Length: 342
Image (cartoon, rainbow, N blue to C red; front, side):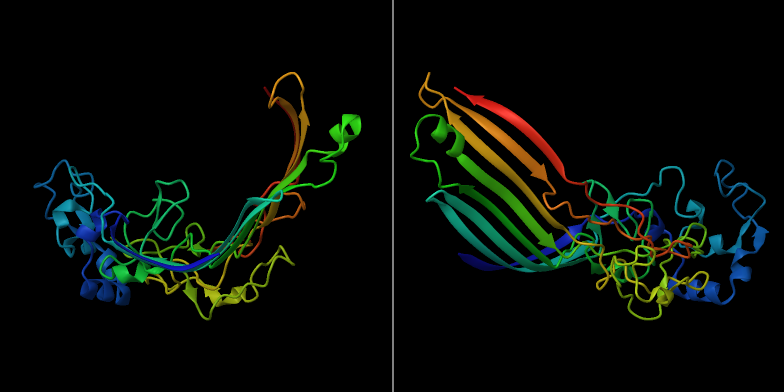
C-alpha cells in the first residue's frame, strides 16, 4: 500500500496568441468604448492612407476611430505584414493531489492494482486533447487573444482536464478448478483466467460559450464569455433534453463586455466514466514442445453495456442549450481470438 501527496507548479506555460496583447485598447479606452460604442466605431479620415498604401486595413480613406487609440495604430488591429499571432509563455498552473495505491503482486493465482486519486488542477491555459491545441476559453486555438488582454487573470480557472476523483482497479485471477485434472477433463476445465480493468470518475468540467453570432467583443479583445446570474447546476442525464437544473442563469452578456463566466466551470461536469473492460483466457497445453500452448481469448469492451452520454450543448443562446445529443462511449463489443505459443 502506498499513499502520497503530489504538488506541482508550472510557470511560463504556452498560452494564447500575442498579437492582440501587443496592440490592445488600453483599459481606459476600453471603458469609454463600452460607454459610447458609436463614437469609437464611427468612420473618420484615415491619417495612414498615404503612409501605408499597401496595408490591407489602413489604406482606405476612412477607418473606425478606435484604431487610433491602440498603442501601435500602424499595425491595424494587431496584425500586419511581419506581425503574426504566436503562443507566448505567460501562463501558470498549480496541481494538488492525494493518491492511494494498493498493489497485490501475483501469488496464488491472483494479482490486482487498485488506485484512487483525489486531485485539482488550476491554470491560465490548458493543453488540448489533441496534444497540440491550446484551450483559450474555446476548444481549439480559434481565439488568438485573451478575453481581456489587459487582465490576463480573467482566464485563470479550473483546468479543462481536471477530474476531481478517479478510481481504477485492474485485476487478474487464475480460476482454481481443473488444475490437477488430466486428459480431456483437465483440458476443458483447467487453465481459465479472468482479467479486467474497471474505472469510475467524475467526468471532465464543462466550458460555456456563446451561440454563433452572439458574441459582440471589443476590438482587439478575445471572444466574449456568457454571464452567470448564479452557479450553473447539473440536473443529470435523466432528461436528455435539459442537462442543467437552472439553465436560465446562463445569459448572453451586454455588448462589448467580457462576460463573467469562468473559462472552465468548477461545479458543472459532463457525465463521467463507469466502465469495465474484461477478458477470459483459456490455456491448452500442447505436448509437442515444452511451453507450447494454445490460448483462447474472449475479450469484451464495456462489459456492462452502460451508456456514457456526451457533453450537453454549452453554447448560451442556442435553442438546444443544455441538450445532450451524443454518446461518448461505444456499446458492448466482443472479440474472440486464438493464439499459438510454441
